[in-house]
Length: 122
Image 1 (cartoon, one colour):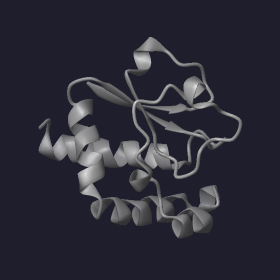
Image 2: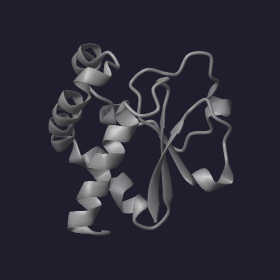
Image 3: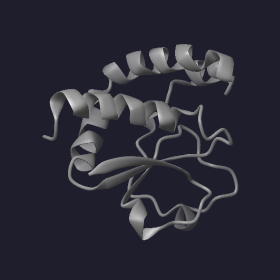
């Protein structure tokens, strides 16, 4: 079906489908009930060193995406099940960052969309 990206602080919607937090750290001030997650695979989050290097600096966005993709290449056992789910139903990748355009959920969506385009649903 599709992969969506949404800030975890936004209200839960039925259209979110399968909700996945893709941050390594729990979002400040949010309860588990309010987050309404289906999954929180911390292994999909960028490494702490990459996250610190990026620092949500838009000037480092392309470098971040490239480095994050390299990290994702090594953890296919965590993202391939999500890609398979997304082929059949809506999957929403949730993030806590304020920047809606430059965050790991956006980068992960691009990575998964590209993989699905080449490999198709499994």
